Length: 244
Image (tube, rainbow, N blue to C red):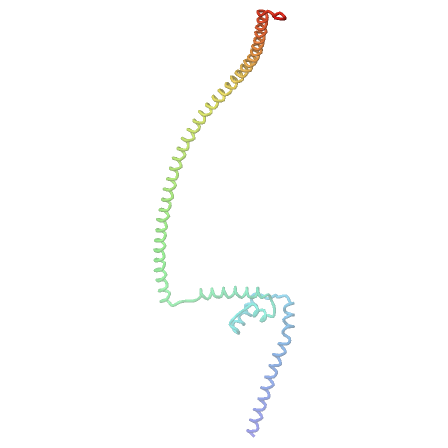
């Protein structure tokens, strides 16, 4: 009897387990078939999830998968903007991390060591900073002094060059004035020479005219002398008779 009951019990338990196993597979298969339709409906439905719901969904995902993503939050909540969901979760995670760090308490020995090390480190940092600042200040002072010296030398050189340039300019202006005076005198002499040349040209023309006139008179005199000589010759020599 007991054996029969045990066999029946085992047989009944196996059937129940098999039916449960089959039902779970059917539900999984059904959810896979219906999942796109559900996602389409969720995508069409406006996402209106509070920060608290998003954080709770993120905590569930963190426990289940150890990682929270925008897509995971959207699947967990059944909709919503992935960017907004992950943004809310990251703000919460950062705040939680800060609070966890602030709430963490250390043993007194470690706190004392940290305080001592912090003071030592601060002292060393202060010393190093002072040394760097002192070195930088000295370097800057040397650099400023060098630049000031170079500027002073440049200023002195510029002043000297300007003085020399002033002397040269003054000399050139003086020479230019003298040259201008000489040019003026030369121009006056040239104008006077041109006037004289015109006068001489006029005199030359007059002399040439007179010379031409004199040549004409001389030619006339020669012709007169020739006529006079001819007349004289004809008078002195009588005409010969015919037959002689």
